[in-house]
Length: 402
Image (cartoon, rainbow, N blue to C red):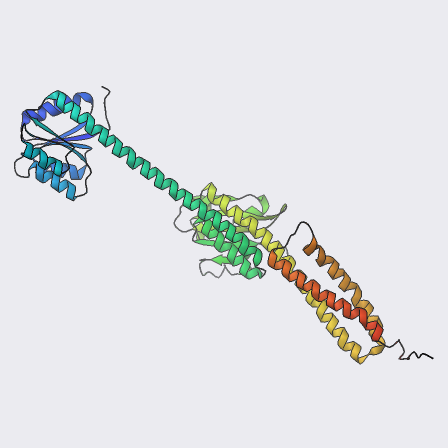
């Protein structure tokens, strides 16, 4: 029989001859790790210190009996497999042993063949229990990982819906940063955007940043990470002495950062970090990159939408100003309507492809806003087209029909 090095067996008997039979003649030759105790109290101390896989105990022990030992172990929640020994033919003792949770009962004097057979059955029970525990642990770990992946995917889907519906850039930056911290399980983070006029990355959003005079929202901040990513265009993870040398190391002990890339141009950086020093993984970087992809789409669309809104508003304000001026100066109405018609047509020509194009670049709410703007522009153009018909010709002359 092959040696078994991983099972631990505790032998409890007050008779040295019995202990010698079990330990030296049966167990140790087969390679088991064996400990022996002459009484129940000693056995209980050994079991509490290093729980054995199997206990072979006599029921008749001085002081703390074998039955008391079994009851004490069960009260402590031990699941150790127990083989009880006692007088042959003592059925009542065997019944008591089984009621207390014994796997088997062997009569004395012990026979080596019976002991080996009982031990084999007990070991099979131990290994089966160990296998069940291992499977349960692996199943629990797999379920935990599955739940985490489902939560990550659900989060990313939610981020996609949320950020494409937000047009206010300040609110958008906050949403994106919160999403980045969630998927990386970080507790500190910031979002930087490249501003050509500033010459340095601008801090646009932050979460749990320290209150330092050098760190202010909407102000340049050289964290030592963002400038590197804007040059390389590649994400990275940092911790330990490498991070401590950078200014970001004053804020966090570990960090993961990814660039915000619009085509081939880096427009910003998202950084997530923690104060504990827990190193970020490659998966953390992948998840943060997914958030960064949504960020780029949302930021570009948000800026474009704001520009369109500003242009439409400017056109509307110009039109209203022209109408007021026309009321005071009818002689200029024809010239003013000609000036308004071209930009209105141009604005509609700019906006209509965004709504009716096959490859939509706008989120549903953005498309709805642009469509409403188009309707208003169309209404304005109809008014402009009608104005020349109601205006007097230049010079104030009135045409009569004879």
